[in-house]
Length: 314
Ligand SMILES: C[S@@+](CC[C@H](N)C(=O)[O-])C[C@H]1O[C@@H](n2cnc3c(N)ncnc32)[C@H](O)[C@@H]1O
Image (cartoon, rainbow, N blue to C red; front, side):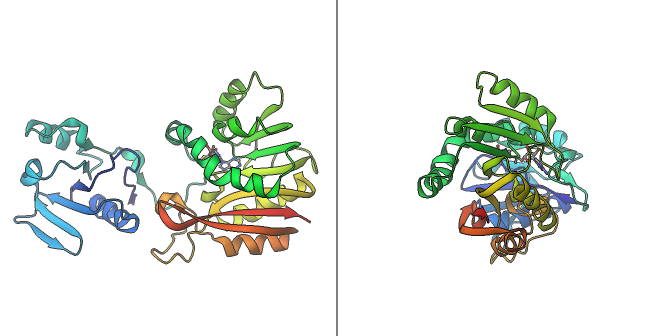
């Protein structure tokens, strides 16, 4: 079993306190050591009798937690989260500092495909970040390549936060995603825009006509796709793009990373990036009839974690 640290629910701070040094706590520490999110990490447990620092972790007895600095406390237990949280509150710790996890943070070793994952929490958190992603990454590429926006495809659009911005540039914009609830949301969201069409797609087939698209973009979705899925979906991109059509693909660059070894299970890697990299993309493009115009390696919480490939159908 692998226990995912509740990234996104823990406030940014100079340090964090992990309450529980068992399998869950150890799993958290491994993830935090890769990401360097917190300069100070305390690990508290009843089994520690005196404070001790080993490498970057300060191990402390559980009863010392109320007197530690005011850092967020992440309870490393699925079963006893509520109980531990109550006990900490009764010792004077503010409830706001305590983060517990439920069983959705416990992952089987087996792989969950990105199209079967429940992205609801992501959709809610990501919405406010569309403008900064657009201005930082997509707009400079648009200015440089002058993409043909006559018929655009947003592949794996989610709830349409990027489509909201790109719809204003597009003659016609087709948004596709495997998640039918996300597509229902997009249909409602864009109901007043005549140039936007929203369609539920199958994991490996895109419901648009061959040669009908002038430009495809895919943002923060294929970062979770493995080699086989990207290989497959690029044959679909090739089918739906017209000759000379271009695509901007945001994908993982985690494979062969200098600061961690990427796992085959994307959910075990920093920011859930797949075991894939820029070289893999270049290889797939070469055999699928695409020219790589540019590969921009970018930081995503971790240095050089992601890559944006700009590709063109021959
Ligand atoms: C992390 S969300 C990103 C959504 C959107 N691009 C954004 O930036 O807000 C990933 C999305 O990819 C979709 N997805 C995963 N596999 C897919 C596939 N094979 N085809 C189409 N959509 C897929 C999921 O349903 C989910 O909406």
